[in-house]
Length: 430
Image (cartoon, rainbow, N blue to C red; front, side, top):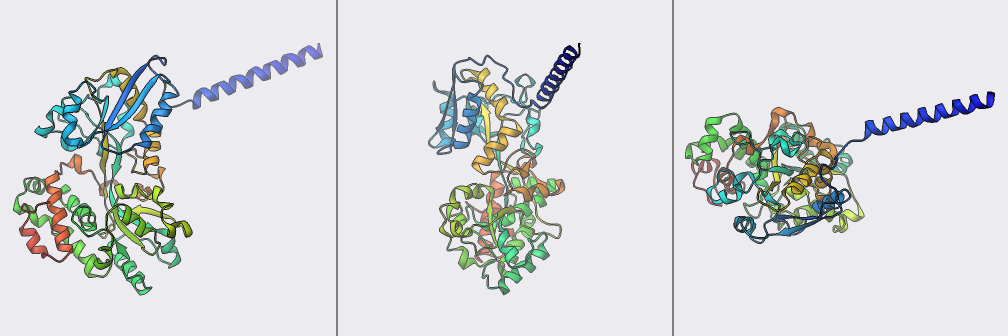
C-alpha cells in the first residue's frame, strides 16, 4: 500500500508539473499565428527603389517558416516614380510596392493611388496601432493607404567616447551646445560640429534649420498655409531657423572649410565621423543607416572603435525636436494576384517584432514606439511629445521644404543675408 501510495503521489506531481508547464507555455505564446492554409502555393513580389533589400529578404525567410510554399521576390524598378503607375497596370504587377505620402492628392500619381488597398479595413487584421500615430497618414474618411516600415529624422551623430575623454557632457540645450563647442575648440578641435556642405541637397544647413521651421509652422496654421502656397509673406517664419544656422557657423561651432572637404552626405560623412576626431556630425537618419556596414570599412574605426548615437540638435532653451517622418512605406496592390496571402504577409510584417527586426538590419529608425530597440536612436525616445513633429500629418509640402533647404544653404554659405532670404521666399529653385 505504501508503494502504491508513492506511485500515485509521483504521478500527481508529474501531472501537476506538466499542467503548469503547459499553462506557462500557453501564457507566453505570443506573436503571429497563421490564418490561412500553410500549404498554400503562390508568389508574392515587392517592388521598390532600393538596389537591394536584405532586411526584407530576412522577413521573407521568417514568413516561409510558416508558409514554406510561398515564393517571394524583391525587384528594383528603374526610374521608380515615373514607371510605377505603368508597372501596376501591367501583367507582372507587384503585390506590394514602395509608396510615399506625397503621392496622395497628386494628380500625377492618381493611377498609383487607385491601386492602393485600404489598410485600415478591419477585415485585414493589420495592427496599425504598433506604429507611432504621427507616421500614419489618414484621409478625410480615415482610410490608410500606406504603412510605414521605416522612418527618418534629423540630428547629429555624437561620439560618446570623445565627450567622455574630454570630460564633457552631451548638450541638451542651445546654451550647453555653444558652451561645449567652445570647450572642444579650446582643446584643439577646430570644428566641433561638422556635416556635408558642398551642395544644397543634403546639406547640414537644412538639417539644422528644418526642425525649427517645422516647429514654427506647427504652432501657426495660417503660416503653414502661406508657406505651402509659396507666399512671400511666409518668408518671415524662416527667420529663426536661418538665424540658428548662421549662429552655429559664426560662433565657431562649425568650420565650413572643413565641412566642404566632405564629398557626399552619406558614405563620406560616415567615414569622416569614424576618423574619431569629430564630436558631433550633423546628418539625417538615412545617413546613419549606412554606419553599421561602414564600421569595418574605416581603418580608423577598426583600430579605435567608439560608442556613438544620433541625438536631436539642441537649438532652443528646451532642447531639440524630433522630426518624425516616414522613410519607406508599403502599399498593397488591390488588384494583385494572391491578394489574401499578400495581406497575410502584411499582417505578419506590421508588428512590433518584425518592424523592429527589419529596422535593425537596415539600421533605420523603427516606426514603432520602441525607439530604444537600437541604442543609436535611443536619444529620440527621450524627446517629449510636445517636441515631436510629424511633417506629413501636419501637412508640410515638398515645395515648402525646398524653399527652406536652398535658403538655409545660401545663408550658411554667406551668399545672401537672412533678410534677403526672407524676402525671396517662394522664388528659390532646387
